[in-house]
Image (cartoon, rainbow, N blue to C red; front, side):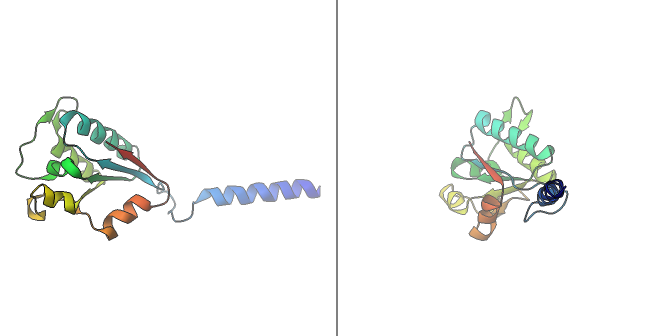
Length: 147
């Protein structure tokens, strides 16, 4: 009888500890996906953004970090090619991701290397600083995908 009570008590504690993970809020998925996108290649970047958007639409948090050549995707005045699979430009896909609650961060050093200023970026993107980028990358449970 005592061992049955101990087993039930142990199972109850395990169930309670799994109900809400530390640092998360009830009903909110923990972690999410951090996409490190380094290319503006229409095919490769389109695959990354398409996959990332599907993750977001499935209810997970999403941060897209544009760096190296990918910073040009967020530039207002750089002509964009349409990705055949997405049926839209990469920039339009970024806008759709942000409209659905995803976050887009742009590397400030890569922007400068590409000759871009914050004023030249589409609305909604955030210029990455350590207080912006590090928490998005290091949050508990975050998975990183790099393209």
